Length: 129
Image (cartoon, one colour):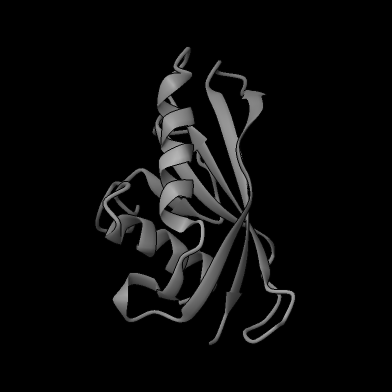
């Protein structure tokens, strides 16, 4: 499993959504923010670097709600930050050991072509493979 997939699993472990898999339709995605469902969260890599890098990985997390909804994606973004900021430990209990620092949280990224509000948060993740 790669780092952004592990982070997605960790968010599910924390009760912040359900990972979308071949077997389960969920609202948490890694590497892609698909057009549906409307309410969705995507864990994206800006620069995953490599395990053990002193610079760490740069990760973005996007949240989106149904057309016209501002509160849901904003509050979801803040809830994720409250769980991840300062986290130091193993992802999902048995994943890689990480140290997570929030760089920016719940930045408004405007709306998409369907009128859905987007929020983005940026994190620095230092990890061991």
